[in-house]
Length: 138
Image (cartoon, rainbow, N blue to C red):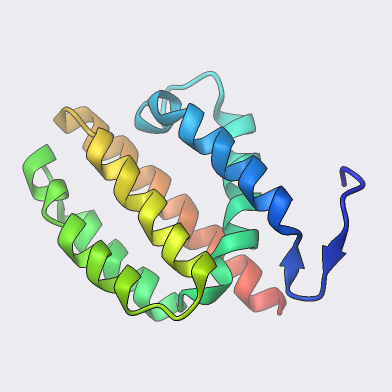
């Protein structure tokens, strides 16, 4: 732990913004997920981010998005999930969940080639796994 205060619903908001900033500064590593030399650091920050921000989105909603993501073979097919992400985000009553979905959408916007699609799918699989892990702990 880093000594920051925590509350009963998870980590403190300042922790979440720290992890979110890390992810935003490392889009390139995310899109090279399977080969990046930052994998351990990326996974650690991703897990903490999902723990902080992911509680508002249901496992069902996340898995529905993931089922669409998994079928994407090209950049264009992956880009087509952006409206679905916007819809899921708009339906959230929880600020953390909205921000969580928005970050996923921002990463999708950065995908520039079909290799990134494969890496994004692996990254999203990690999101689903960490989300399930932290939901089951509650």
